[in-house]
Length: 132
Image (cartoon, rainbow, N blue to C red; front, top):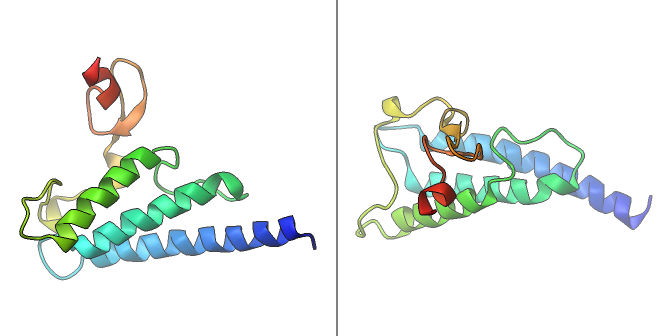
């Protein structure tokens, strides 16, 4: 087995473990109350980002969240990091009771920009089209 084969095997295993970990964190962040748990949420988005960074290097199915929107995941990691570690600051992310969150926000919050067709989180115009 070549070094490249060993690296590919390791990456694929790590990628699969990251997907499992992201799913577990998603489940954990929704347990035990009406508010989303910010530490689990920040960690979930960080793990999803790590999976997206490995995705182009593995021969595996795409993750159950948009693998090309790493910019959005970086934003979510930063926002939830602040909510988790600095609770005295005003929240910059929307928080709501568990019952109001969609079952899988990564699927239901994605739409196409009405101007350029880019897939993004939200509705209407993407950030790039809003800025122009």
